[in-house]
Image 1 (cartoon, rainbow, N blue to C red):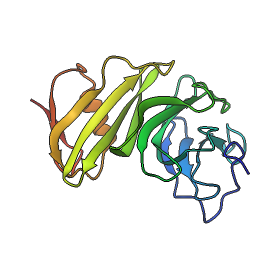
Image 2 (image 1 turned 120 degrees about the vertical axis):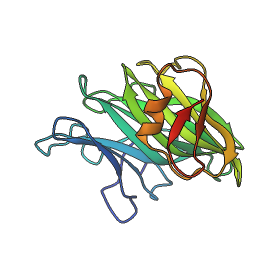
Image 3 (image 1 turned 30 degrees about the vertical axis):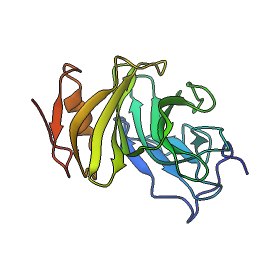
Amino acid sequence: MSPSSPPAPSSSATSPYFVPDGSGGAVFAWYTSVPSLPCFAQHILANGAPAFPLGGVAVSTNTINVRVAPSAADRASSQEVFVFWTEEDSNQVVNGVYGQKFNSTGGPQWGATGTVLVPLGADTPDFVTTVQVGTGALVCWVDSVGYGDSTIQATRLDASGAAVGPQLVVSSMPSNKFALAAATLLEALPPWSGPMTASATTASTSRT
């Protein structure tokens, strides 16, 4: 079975990440251990019907790399769904941040394998989190060089998947950072420039 043909729900699937769509439904993103760590997305409408094909749609058709820990957001006006995740090589040695946008029926909009925010490299991007902003999305993650040496990074994308401005350092103080929340991303929005500081273990931020 290829990642483009999602398996039926089973014990191999992780607990899905989900957010309300504002209309009584919700968008979901998850990954499974079979086959070989693919990520999927689904939009369940208020009436309980799936907007995407049954079983969800794969965020990428790349069968060489693996992907984990997705985060999803939706644009209510168009019912588009944005998903971002940690991309890894098959040995899970090098890591990056990738993303995909789906139209209202689950058709991928950013190519078969998504768009690359951070190419595969030695740093470990964890806790990838996204919120929908404008016609695109704002994405934040913890970039870990090693234990006790992590920063929080963010990138804003437009509807086409292109970056809006340079990658932003939300927290430049190296420390252990274990979680992110949407509040972190929203704090980074106005005016999308200037240094930020953050607590080492929470998503609480303040502009300096």
